[in-house]
Figure 1: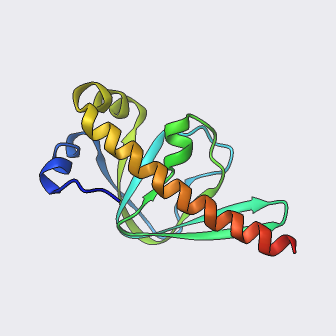
Figure 2 (figure 1 turned 60 degrees about the horizontal axis):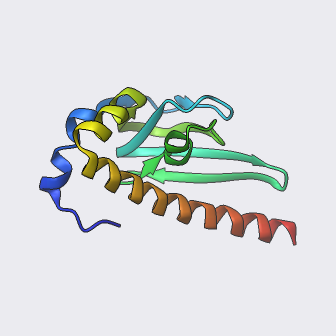
Length: 135
């Protein structure tokens, strides 16, 4: 989803904090104010959406992101996310995001573009689920 190489992304490291989660931890709940964005290094998150058509579950695996849409759009969480197993994530909070935009605007722009692409993929999957369930 990006043509940027490791050297480019190394400059983003100071803005993230490494966090470990035990199996069964609640990362955030639906309706919470969005304060953080997550990059999973290892492990797995499980996002549970409670839709009118029923519940929808999504597995978020290592090497992907979590919580990008509510974080970057400053909206409330749309899912409850828990850990399926011990998970290590790199976390970006609002203050660090604001700093990144000022200090490393090229990284912030690229991160936002990748997040929008990932959100588009997730929304397509959820829309397909809703349409299939409604029929």
